[in-house]
Amino acid sequence: MSKAMPMAACAMAGVKQMQSLTLPWPSKDLSPNARVHWTRRSKAVKQARGYAEVMARRAGWSGLSLPVEGRLDLWISFYPPTRCLPDDDNMLARFKPYRDGIADALGIDDRRFVSHPLIEDEVRHAGQVVITITGITQQASNGGPRLHAHPAF
Image (tube, rainbow, N blue to C red):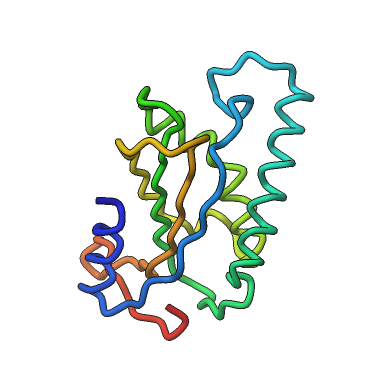
């Protein structure tokens, strides 16, 4: 289901889909519910952000030619390590350092991302997060979002 949503959005707008980036399940120390010392949390944030940046660069995302304005749709599929499904708001908070690292690799501010989180039912060993960036979203004249095709996608 997670793959269908980005592809459907791309097909409607005539936007090509970027390749996916797979990252490990975020550390429990990044959870807003975690009761850990601030230095431990800070270390987990730094490690996750750096790892996401390196992996995004290895995937070739740093060489993309992005427009100066517009928002990027960030499709995030969370594949939990167990059948116990986490809350999507908790997972977005745990994902934030990854999001920052991807933005660092792209050379943009992470506020340009429009997040589309999906907690998958499929269990994957050790858990995974699959990220796909699809289109450029800009505000339409009627106030609603619209997708624009861009040659980089």
